[in-house]
Amino acid sequence: MRLSNQRDHFEIPDEVAYLNCSYMSPLLRAARVAGEAAVARKSQPWRIHAADFFDESEQARALFGALIGADAEGIAIVPSASYGIGVAAANLPLRPDQHIVLLEDQFPSNVYPWQALAEQSGATVVTVQRPLDYDWTNALLSTIDERTTIVAVPHCHWTDGSLIDLVRVGERARAVGAALVVDATQSVGAYPFDVARVQPDFLVCATYKWLLGPYSLGFLYVAPQHRQGRPLEYNWIGRAGSEDFSGLVSYTGGFQPGARRFDVGERSNFALMPIAITALQQLLDWHVDAIQETIRELTGQIEREASRLGLEPVPAERRADHLIGIRSPRPLPQDLTTRLANEQVYVSLRGQSIRVSPHVYNTGADVQRFVAVLSSVV
Image (cartoon, rainbow, N blue to C red):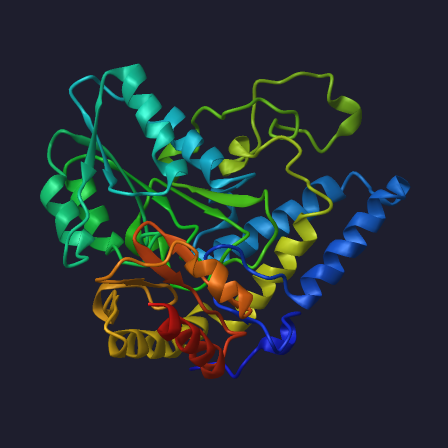
């Protein structure tokens, strides 16, 4: 079911056409209020109690789990996508004769850790070249073989929204004994994801894009077979019995259950966590399927208009519904995004693509404003 326009939930002026959620989402009005109250609480620290170190984290853990069909036991709290990828890299051993499979032009945070791991282990990074028909799935399936040990990919490509069928890729990875690591920062919250169907070994998602949350916060899903693994850091709150502040000097080798051992230190972020909780609650209230359908109507309009201008948008059958890349057969102006911004129209230029990423606060009129300015500069 498509949602009605939800712009009133955000603080976006009428004259602004913000079509750039894949860069950074605006905060919900309610999330800003929650964040302001949270910051004010720190000015009176006697209002922060021992339970507050745990309760909000557990609430956020459960909400994110609900968004991807996972239980709270499998969710760790991390500060960034790179941190979550780092956890995965630390817990997936490699031999010199093995391969790590990535995509061409993949986001750097899901590349650099694997390059470092390959250098340390003597393994090889295999990069799948960008297919001309945007069919990353079949390109991946033809690359993954018995030498593949790790497949580290996004749900959709960050530069243009071209989609990977993670169910099929996951099946192929498991068939050859490889781990599947997913950076879902550009999809979860706007595009459905089901842990039970995909079965990733690790999945990470930063909150500041499609989760409508704050910067410097994210979530990591860890599959059951990896939950006894090695964390990146050994902080106090990840240890068994950390709820008992008076007993913290009774050092223990045990950890909190599930994926909590992988939590970042100071995960009880009293300023950011209430913002994330408010945003996750709103996403669940809207339902991701409804968000997807609502945005699909806008990206479909963008695809039609871009084609009419002689541009080359990623076709609907090859992309996610919430994010569309547009290429041009002619060179694009170097100052394209600046010219658009001068008219208060906001998109991104990533790689060779104009990246347009609307949300439920956008309307067809926003799309028309974008098209009108675009047509004057390409």
